[in-house]
Length: 595
Image (cartoon, rainbow, N blue to C red; front, side, top):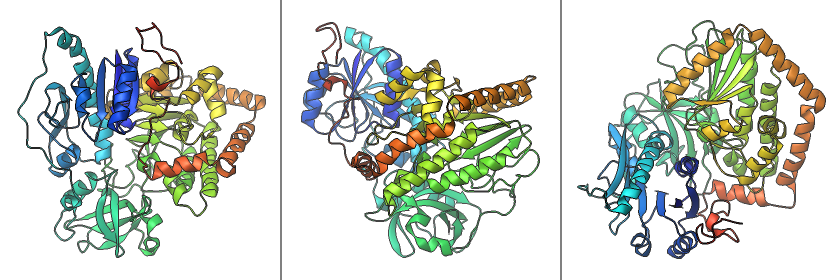
């Protein structure tokens, strides 16, 4: 079928649906919901069999939903209506939530139901729930809805009208306001979690109004509301029954940054990271839950061998395998983050293990450069240069590791330089639901580095590498495996993927031919180095990057500014809006698609 996605943005859910439905053979074109006339024009050009709205902030025009089947993906259970659906579910402490696919009609979220799926809620940030449970449920529900379309058109099946709940209003800051004197830690976290990503919780730090983001429980006590100290670049603040760590904030007219990057006063607070490793319970990171306790997971044997402790970086060992977790906010890796991770990686290399597994975070493996920090820097070109060199240093350390076999295990999505960071390892595994965006051009024709010119062609070939970079489209884990970008994709959910990753990593370390595998790896690396030194690849990439950062063309800086500022789209990029390609013809009219 021809399916037109009508969406506010090409977000994580929209990308996953694009990947899944394209793999099923459907032709997808995308139009950003800018205004009614643009939407009408898109429908006339594409002549879709179905219009799907995976992420919409306003109603579809009546002239369209009356003439076409329009299905809305609503992040709420059957009968739920209105905006801020997931926000309210978190704040209200719902134990179960879901996704409903319903047909667009005159009344908002009141149309008949085509499909629905539910899932158990967990204590986590809104963005994490949306990217995982909501997305997985939406994929199942949309596929079920599409399977019913032939029967609907034949008149043998009808969507179900259901009793509706009262429509809830958009959540306001007053609903999220924290009462530091009375709110327990769980309540404070629910308020922070339901606002994470956007819009944040309005509060104050150091006497200045700001939006708070990125909260986690912290094992401390103090006078409620008091700033007890700092951990990394975040601050620890007492609640009525404990404390929370707040990692990021934003002041009016400013950029979302780590608290220490917004308020220099943070540097004067007492450092509260533990001084022993492993620390005493309960200072363990809480499994794969992004809302876990800060800290370092316990080892099954031994100490850390000098692995630095960090709110974003943790390390654990199991027998002959070392696991390096790095969970940077939104997957962004600034200069200091890269340097800290490099230090932790180098320390991990000194441990008496055979395999090092790079686990990234539960939501993101990595998204490359920290564009927010770059935008906020006194000199964005200089900070861009420092950041890309720090990324390259980290990649080079992984590529040239001769003492261990290395594995990148992608639990979450990866984009731009973060996708190529993953390729620096000897093996690259990913959870089946992971989405990859291994390209740079969407950021103002950025050339990219991270040794992609060496890593990508050796995996997928020169022609396929150029196509990946040129097309600027997301890759699903299954298709990425088929083309060789990934070695394997497995695991239906996060827990399953992590368990299988540990089993496979241990098997790799215990393999009878481990020594032979390591020798073969080092032999191939020596051959590659002789053919073209890594430093030559880096120099060539950075020559292009230097032009991006310092040259006469400001495209990168303009694109970064709009990305960081979340500037509303004024048009849909042509690589997404297939129907707007020059020479495009509706299949069936001429029998082909061109352009």
